[in-house]
Amino acid sequence: MKLGLDVDIHKLKAEKLRKGKNKAEKDLDSLKTYYKKLHMSIRTVGLGKTSKQWRQEIKEEKTKANHWEKKFQDVRVREDALKKSLLGSQSEKERLQARVAELEKSLH
Image (cartoon, rainbow, N blue to C red; front, side):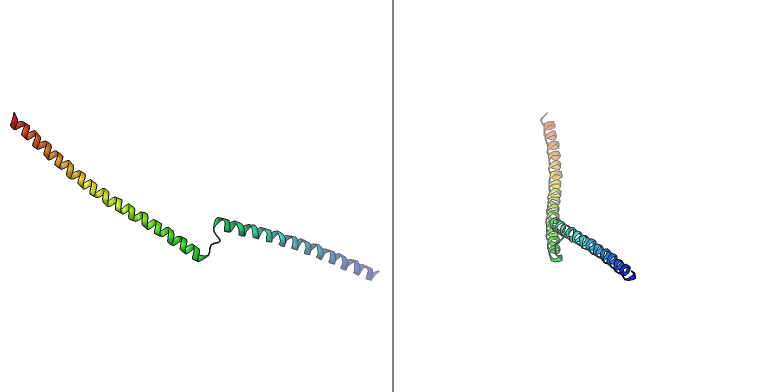
């Protein structure tokens, strides 16, 4: 009878271990699936790049930024030149208007 109880106890322990093993395998499969989905998402959004790829992308973006900064500076220089030219033209216009007024007075 004692041996029968020992056998029953061992069978219950074995069954409990089998159930635990099955649950662990199920959890492992679930984790593997989750990992695959996560890895695919990372690749999809571009986070799976190598550091060399990131460095290259950063270099390209810096080049673009420098290009636009240079264009901005060129436009600013042109704007300053145009402002100076406008001021010169306005001064010339005022001088000519004064000269015209002076000539009109001399005619009368």
